[in-house]
Image 1 (cartoon, rainbow, N blue to C red):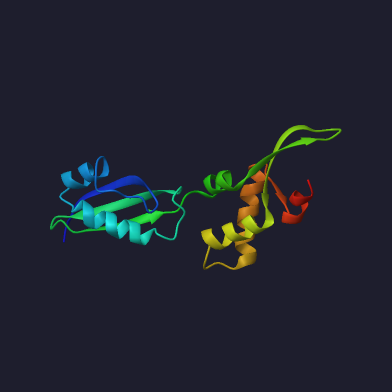
Image 2: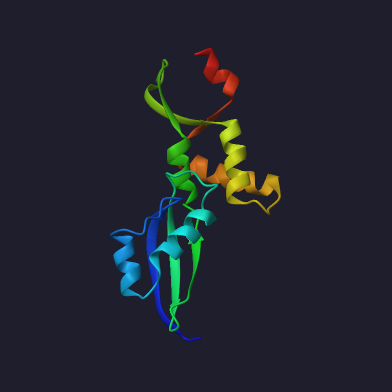
Length: 144
């Protein structure tokens, strides 16, 4: 089989529809849009609907196709998870972003499922620190 086209499209997880605009693009490539949408939605059914995934679609000359997806960047997921709180302190005034410890662990499991937990948490911690986000225990935020 020879490759006819390779395209990159962005689709919301579990939310592919055969209608326009996706159906039009797939139809122009000779792909059965209903089949693609069913396969994609089945593949992404466990992901939250608000994840927008980059999909690499390879179309062959016999009109068959394969696709692969990339998960959202860690920073994008952190933006969804973080909470803002108004802190009044003697040296600091303003809004500060934080995430809960449980969210940090779940994100590490999600992004790096086959990696050692200690290593994956270190990677996520690096992204959190560079984003100027604090980590807070669930119990600490309930006291406020």
